[in-house]
Length: 613
Figure 1: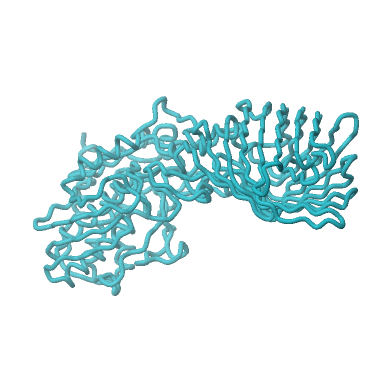
Figure 2 (figure 1 turned 90 degrees about the vertical axis):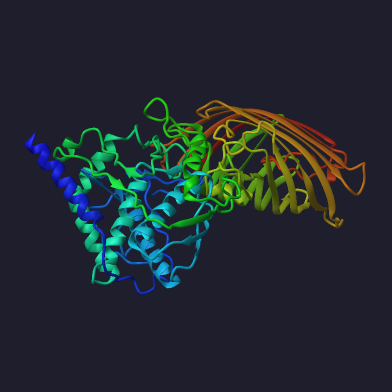
């Protein structure tokens, strides 16, 4: 009992030290003129994988810092080298997010300086979370209360689809268990630093060090072990940043008293028995804060005040789950699963080489394809600098070059409802459903060695529609049915017979069905082309294929990696003017003399590529 009493007395003394009212002022020199800069930190977890859309950079997100290596605080810090931010576990305050803490402290300084300069008048604030107007007396409690309320507003807006960084949604980390406690601690320490005689940065360094000491901050290894204790309960190591399923629990409490979340077994980390350290939201009279939501949030037009927070948090909770059932999370919609086809059929690759061999009737054919860069995934596909050389009996050695080709790039709709152009799907998390996309080809040229024929398609553009409504879903590479329609400009020139550019419309239906591991697959394609210069110039191309793939690699993200495939393809091409044939398939086998070409191919292909994302 005596030990417990001493522990509680120590915690209460620490809280009194933290919450004592300041009496003087030593603000940063530019606090009134400039608001604090954004500090991008920190998702709950350690050694996290980063994923932006379908990009998977080969880097990890550590997120953990040592108490003795925090660097030096800088108001409006410009680089990560000026201060070290991350998570540190404290025995009485749980996880502390130092990025949140520093930003809330700097926000206090900015608001206090603005309130004093306004001399009782309203203060207009332009924040990344929308607009705000503050009317309050220039006191410690009023500035701290407004600073904390703005941090609560930040969690609400990001949870509702608002964003601070373009193309980067923060919904995945809104109301993380440590966020608001760290924010309130930062606003409290900002008030104390304001009262110190030292310059602002030095004063906050000193207050942070004293607070972490009072809360029982642990070392780097202990913080990692604390995160491991709640992995599968509060966060998932299986979901990359910024995955929707990274957080398994969200702390929606915003006062008037904030209780820290402590790990289940603190004594295993070296913590002694003791009471947690709750923090109390400042309460000041005469504070009026009016808030306007940022563009892209689904909160409604506003304006709002802190009196609306309870209803707004409840609204966010309905669309952003607080926890995942079943403890350890499985892959969420839009996220990769270890060993799944998402890893073997999706990604960005450079220097792809594909060798092929097959037969057209009784005659052998073969060739080689080199692709400078290729991107595939639920958001679409894109190939840059594609060169193919093939041999067929009729056309001899055929060379084919394409500058840029995209079969489809789908528009991205973020979970909050905001729509972004197709390229954004490669850089941010998108809702796992979609229908509409765009595609096209630039600089497509083909030459037949035996006939001397040149054919080119300088530009082609089309619209695509995912009929299964699963574009941007991880199931898209496994199961899809896409309808495309568009226009192309074509020109076919024979020796001694110069051609002319012909506009041609096309309608295409393409479908794919694969097993979950991507090993077995079937595909179908049907395309109708119509010249706009004459109704008698038409083309029909159709094919069905079955394929078996073997992925030859050492690990789930090995690079370079190889694929061996065996496919059976049956196809038919019919051009009413065969001399104008210009087909898009890997095998340009349409006859230039006969209207119809029936082909049956047994294709053995070996691909070697370097997977970079």
